[in-house]
Length: 79
View 1: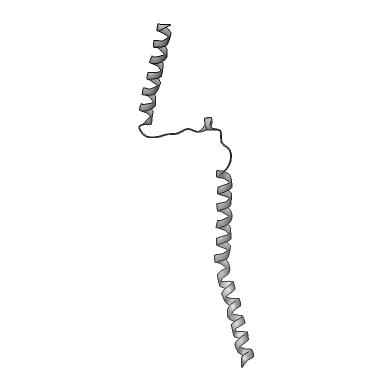
View 2: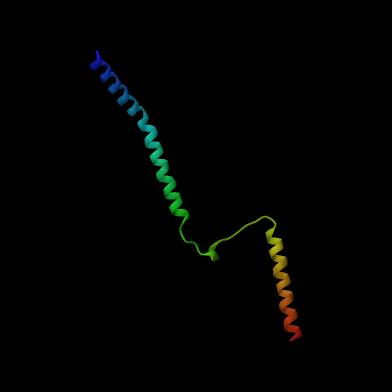
């Protein structure tokens, strides 16, 4: 009787392992994808190639550029 119980436990363990296999494969695939995305996000990118877009910031940057231009013009006219 003990031999039958051991065989049933072994069979149940094998069935459970086979049933869990697709979940394990999905986990490993997603883990690999995360690692690839992380590797891509760590690439060096020159700051000059970055284009920031913040709503409302364009007007402020234009105002600052205008102030800088006025300051430069005033400096050249005074000299």
